[in-house]
Image 1 (tube, rainbow, N blue to C red):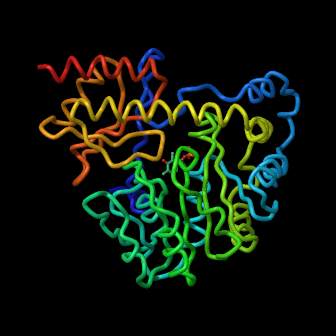
Image 2: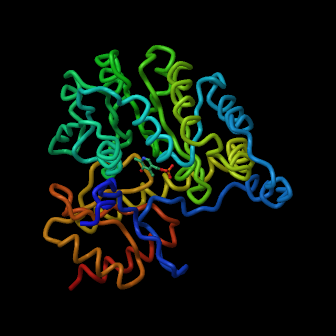
Image 3: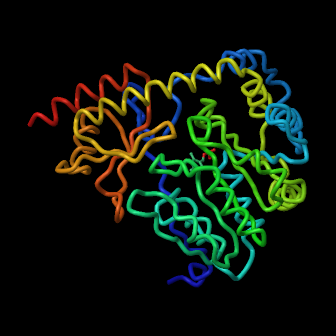
Amino acid sequence: MKPWEANIRKVTPYVPGEQPKNADVIKLNTNENPYGPAPAVKRALKEFDAELLRLYPDPASDVLVDALAKRYGLGKDQIFVGVGSDDVLAMAFLTFFNSDRPILFPDISYSFYSVWAELYGIPYERPALDDGFQIRKEDYYKENGGVIFPNPNAPTSLALGLADVEDIIARNRGSVVIVDEAYIDFGGESALGLLSKYENLLVVQTFSKSRSLAGLRIGYAMGNPALIKALNDVKYSFNSYTMNRTSLVLGAAAVKDEAYFQETVGKIKATRERTKERLKALGFVYPEPSANFIFAGRPGTDAKALFEALREKDIYVRYFDAPRIDRYLRITIGTDEQMERLFDFLENYLKH
Ligand SMILES: *Cc1c(COP(=O)(O)O)cnc(C)c1O
């Protein structure tokens, strides 16, 4: 080993879903929105004055924070924005999970959590979901250095009821509880209404799924002003200009186009309901989905082989070769036409 090699930080990175170069694939593997961004976003992009890119953006991201504050009925000092919720969550791990006690998150959950914990040297424990893939709230009553879980959960799509979410927050007043609501617009009940009651709660959401802007990279956290200030202090110790000028303008435009947001979220939920029935008819089982994806397995069918056969035909879904979940596929809800192509394939595949 070269001497400098000993000084390199060794990490095992998160593996993002595949982004195939070929544009004609049916892409149901990374939970993107099948519909384009809001018309207001497209207009704002056309009108964007590239001359302005000469100047640094507003470090406080005021136009975007203001739009979000109005949308959610919060103060501007209750909102923190970042480069996708991955950036917001990474910043939150660094800011709030700074004790010797382990942080807690489910064994089956967003796989980035353990990556950040390892990167920052945060001890962690992963209480097991029950056999129905549900979070057991009692597992989160023990002493800890913080709690984080997605609601609805990924990759299961299963939501935890708000009363149970509240119990976890109420039992952990001594640590920060982060509810990662990447998929909340598609189902489940948001913890946002609990912000006025619990100063240890941070709710994180994203523009990547329900707002059709995965390519722009915007995420945000909502919490009491002391938590938001702590996040900003860490951000300013890292990079003052995380949000670029285009993200700020287009992101604000997206938040203001409520009608389009409601329409596309509604369409995805309707397609999800139809997809559930079609899957069930083919013998698939799945935890009750509340997100824009279904975590489906079929007793007697090898999930990995099916995943590979789908991929051969340019239909991309997600497969996790990990204990307890290797008999399932995570299938993003696309348009009705895309789901039709998926079912054409499945019906034929399962005949053989
Ligand atoms: C998609 C996702 C995120 C991250 O989304 P960004 O694109 O970084 O905003 C965070 N948490 C969960 C559970 C997700 O599925």
